[in-house]
Length: 168
Image 1 (cartoon, rainbow, N blue to C red):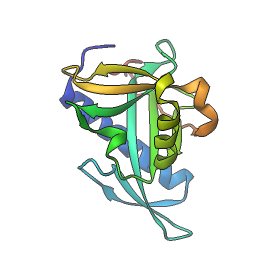
Image 2 (cartoon, rainbow, N blue to C red):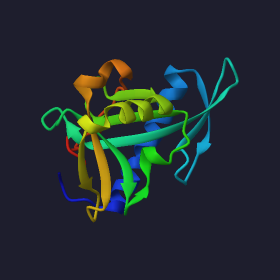
Image 3 (spheres, rainbow, N blue to C red):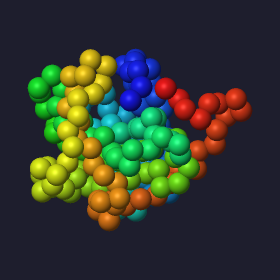
Image 4 (cartoon, one colour):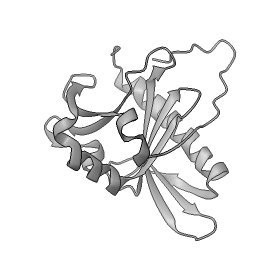
């Protein structure tokens, strides 16, 4: 993996959340209610038809692109030996957004189903340490093996003139 910069990654993650919120509004007939800044969820939306509120956890992956794809989703489970990421989110839906892929770049699953998938397969999943200080425990979910568990779609991302393919 590349060099990590928490502040830059935070900005890129927030940009990803905005793109996903817009996608949910345009494609899934939802109304945006707000962003959240703690570990419970990232986005709050309301279904325009049922009026039901839904919360979303969004993981934006800027490292994978057409030429650099390990085939995995990196799911954070602990930071400094404390539950984090998927272990503490209260979101209804987990969305993994591969920002630099042109196709199949949105992977959605109910959070409860992702937690069950992890629990049922944890012994076969690779664990790695990552993040700025290598104190974040991450499970690698092979996309090809579990793709039937996810709703897969895409956000059409327009590159700005002069924008690099890799945004790190």
